[in-house]
Image (cartoon, rainbow, N blue to C red):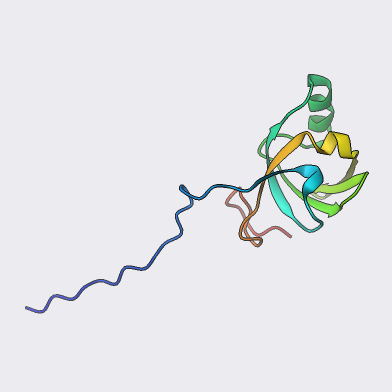
Length: 106
C-alpha cells in the first residue's frame, strides 16, 4: 500500500490578521472601507446616520479634502473634515474585496 502525503498549502488566516483601522478623513480617493466606530456626540452621530453613514456600512472615498466626498450606496455625500475625522473604518483588503466579505467594491 502506497501512502501519499496531501500537500499543505498556506491559507490566509483572516481571524489572526489585524484589520487596518483609519479615520475617514485619512482615506485616499477610490478607497473602500467599512464603518467600525463613530467617535462623536449624539448629535453628530444622528446626522451621520441620516446621511447613511453608520456602523457596518461600506463607504468609498470619491474626493479627499475638506469637504470630503464619499459614496454611500449610490449616493455621494460631502462631509467636513472635522466630521469625517470622527468616523473609524476598516479598510477593504485586498483592495478588490470588501471587509464585509461581500462583492468587490466598485
